[in-house]
Image: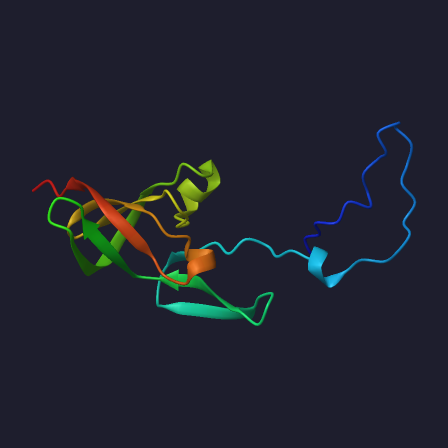
Length: 131
């Protein structure tokens, strides 16, 4: 079963049913969300609209973390997913999405990219590592 963004299933403003006047179209088709997890780097390339390619990160163990005080960006290993405010279930399963808090060797960082859409995990440092 696929995700569909068509509106043929909705009702009219009067409350009556809409009758399908055509079939489903390719541009109305959607995709299931990519749930990026920790693990060996694995990516999937899908065709987008307008001859574009969308790179989706299925699993990754490194992130590009930027320290806003120094402006320096380094590639560091992700130790674990601390919190994911997007979904309680993602929190438990350790899924990385935009806004997720990850623990790295530099400290805690917040993910600023969309791994399922951009094909990379970028983050900004929000807390120093406590020793």
